[in-house]
Length: 209
Image (cartoon, rainbow, N blue to C red; front, side, top):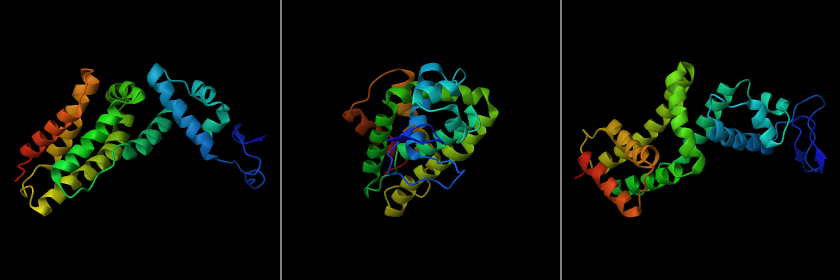
């Protein structure tokens, strides 16, 4: 083993060397910093989060962190967007009710994660206080997620399961808000039978044929 000079992490000695004078952006260090950032955020809240403590938690030097992100807000925005789009993939089962059920199950798994349960309310509070953070998240991550969510409704319309007038925004709102309220806001639980009932409720509200 040898210490990587650019990031201060321990890497395998067989790893290829970077050109002289170039910084090595090792994925393992980025992953460690990402985990440390979210762990620190869940513990302290974004407002009190210290990038120095993030680097220490990840076991790397501050230079490794600042080589990737110039500020706490930049780090938060980039990581939220990178992680957020992959948390709940959009299924294509061929049936509206099953697609809704699969999305709800994926959302439930995400919202039950111990870090996410603590981070999401704090994120929304920070977005209300910080216009730049709010704009970035709403105009990129939330927009992209909603556009992907609308695909479920479009497919159902094309299959004849929903009328052409089905409200795609309502579908997005219902999918996210019902589980968020139950799990995050009230600290409740949602079993599989309730997932099925919620899926049926949303499908009926959209005018499922």
